[in-house]
Image (cartoon, rainbow, N blue to C red):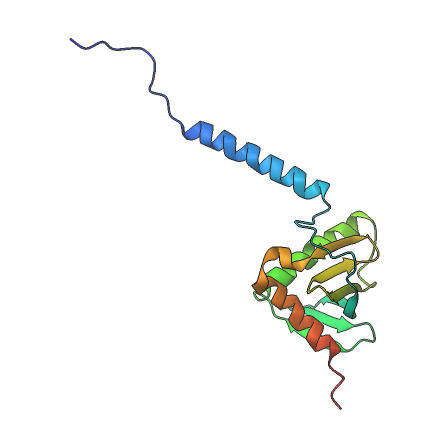
Length: 154
């Protein structure tokens, strides 16, 4: 005869869920404590090779229009496209709203001598090293920088 116990069989699934939640909490805490900077690979001797001041403006149809400081249109990010750029800018805008800063002041997109590409918000002090999100995402902002640097077509 076999022995039966009144205990239900134990499942490891809930424990994996608890471990995943704890890992997520630790990751968020680290991300917040570093100000959103995933890595700090700055060369202390690096200098800015190119810098553009850009404004991002929501348009009535859901597009985001990128302008230079003098008002020249750099790019139109149509709805459903450019997810990384839109996501980064949503985060930056959220920080501005929390500090009661409007959307008029420009952001600063900079290419450094050590190959980094950074996005700075002079109004909040927040900066993002874009390479931390992978080369494809960095390229999205590099295209904006290149477009902004082009002289206005006449």
